[in-house]
Structure formats: C-alpha cells, structure tokens
Length: 382
Ligand SMILES: [Mn+2]
Image 1 (cartoon, rainbow, N blue to C red):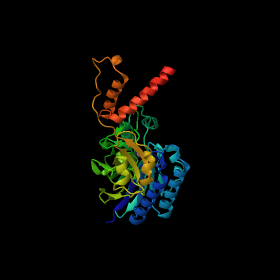
Image 2: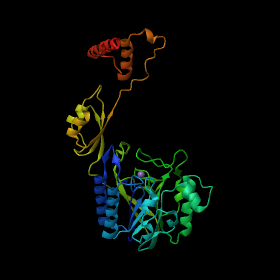
Image 3: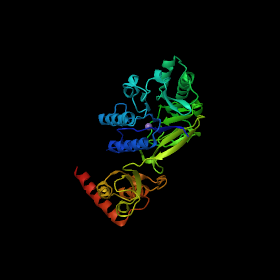
Image 4: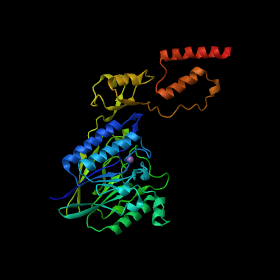
C-alpha cells in the first residue's frame, strides 16, 4: 500500500473531424468521463502524452474544451497535470504560459524544460515525472549543439540522456510522444517524418519506473508493462475497431516497479462498420446502437439510389458509405483480337463482365443498346 497512482491518456486530438463530422461534443463527454475516473481514483497526477489538439492551430472551441478540462482537473480536483505536445500540436502554442506553470500544471513544450520534473511524493518518498515533447531531430541537434544528431533515435537518446543526468531520485517517470519500434500502427496516426526512420528503440527509455507514451492510437505495451501507450480515447478511423478504448492507470510501488491497469472508456457514440446490402443494413438487427457513427460497406451490385438518405433513416449518424466491388481477377486479354473489328456492343460486353464479374443480363443489354442507338443518332447529327 501507499503506492503512487498516475492516470495516463494521450492523443485526444481535440477538434478532430471524422468524415466531415465534428467530434468535439463527443470528445468533451469523453473528457467528462476521464474527470469521473480522476474523482474516483484520486491519482497523484494526470499525464497527457501529446496530440492534445488535432491541428497546430486548433479551433477556438477545442482550445476552450482543453481549458475547461484543465481547470476542472487542476483547480477543481487538485490533481497535478503533466502535458506535452505531440506531432499534431504546435509546441509553441501549447506552451503558452508554460513558464508560469506552478506545480499543478506542468507543461513541457520547450527543450530547455525537459530537465525540470514535476515531483510527487508517496509513502516511500519522491517520484519525479519528466516530460519529453515530440522531438524534431533538427531542433534537438541545434539545442544540444550536436550536428551529428539526424533521426528520431539519436534525438530521443540524446534528450533522455540529459534527463538522466538531471535525475536526483531513485524513482522517475517519463511522458513522451514517439513511435517506438514494434508498436502496432493504425490509419489515423500521421507519419512522424517523411522518408527517413521515425522509430525509436525501446532501449532509449531504459531506467524509468514507467514510460507513458503517446502517438500510437491503440493501447499497447512495448516489451513490458512499464513502457506503454494509453492510445486515443476515441476511435478516429475504421482501422481502430474491435478493441476497447481506455486510459491507463499506472501504479508504482516503493521499489519503483509499475503495474498498469486499463480503464475502459465508453464513447457517447461509437464508431461501427456495418457490411451488407443497403436493404439488410436498414431492415435487419445489428449490434450497433441507433446513434452510433456508422460506416456502411455496401455489397449491393449495381447502382443504389439515395443510399445515404435511406441509411440515415435507420442510422441518423451514418458518416460514410463504401462500396465493395467483386474481385473479378485479371481482365480479359484481347490479344489476337483486333478491337477495331469488334462491334461497340461486343467490346462493352467484355468490359462489363470484367468489371461486374458476370455477363450482361438481357434487360441490361437492351438498356445498353437503347443508349447506343441514341448516341449513334446524335453523333450523325453533329
Ligand atoms: Mn495522435
């Protein structure tokens, strides 16, 4: 007993849109859910590991949402917060007021502040929590005056070294935003660098009681429990289905070893993928909730008229429709066949069968010939 408890979240992406839909109201409800967990669990600190906003210049209502949340946590619940920028954030903008931070709001956005920890104390003594903002290797090279620093691996190893040199207590925690080798990616993370290696080996983080990471949107451990991603609190793409979103509770004992518990979050509207014909999606039973964000993968053949309007009668928050086209293999080879000697109808029948995976039906052929004869008349008249 007498352990220190930290709550860890990341990748809030406040202000994000999903298929054109604003998510901020849902994000605010998620933040309210996190507040409830803080109220119930009384952690020694809340760690927010970057990608607080979705864009470097966030919309003003997203800024207001973060402001309200921080006031509720820091002033309302008297819980200290450690906050770092991720690759989606502007470090300079997120660092507004950072130098005025007191012990209860600890924003680490500038490189010269990484050596300044937030200190918490439990029955066994102090624990220092360091923040490492998302690193631009070129800025780190300049800051440390080490021009040989090129990639994320070098930059991270060098900055963590400066933290190690500053350490003054046995138990230390690091909050960082990085792509650690071996992590599982999804579609809603933005690459950290164009070309070049953007991953960091987990060994760069050795020696901390716990490393609270942001960047990857799926909650996951890297190697062992002490190095882990909390994941995003909401699904931001259809590549993030099939598991529960959560925040992490990190408990640190007197010897400095960490145990992690995932606390599930329930989104007000979940993102679901439904596959079937439009008729089946509208009429049959589905496990999705009426208000969920639905991405429909339609298996209908041929055109479907007014699909979104009809889908929204059953699923008012349907966001997007995808079409599944049959896998028809390789196209018919016209080798040995002089296309100039083929009739338009014969060529179209080959084309249609290649696309649709089945030959023209009699009514389809009749419709095609109707259109063809109209076109021929128009062309002669031109
Ligand atoms: Mn992110």
